[in-house]
Image 1 (cartoon, one colour):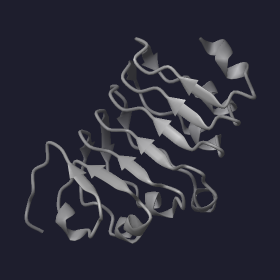
Image 2: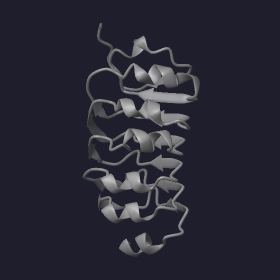
Image 3: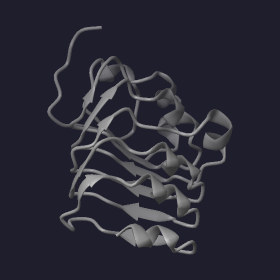
Length: 162
């Protein structure tokens, strides 16, 4: 319910597999104390509101298994460098566009799951620099073999020559 966004000290919001439908409310950005946001495996649609980037203490962001579309909104570069995000789980959606190169600027990122989306282009080379700190990447990727990642999962992937 919208009233949950008035809980300014809320640190953990877990509504995974709760049958939620419709868009993610933009008011979610008011939860600036939130550390863990689990919205995965519902029937959420629309895009991720830009307001989520204001949750600068967020460590775990999970929206996998919905019908979200558009691009992945990320922080600006200075904010990314101060980000506490350790996990992004956005697989099994309808995200499109390119995989954001700013993901490599997230200093604490350990797990990144983006498989089964509609991304185009190549995985940004800057993410290969992040491979030393990341424990697990998963992409639905083209030309993915160029990255030297320690853990690289690919689901429903087609490889094309570079």
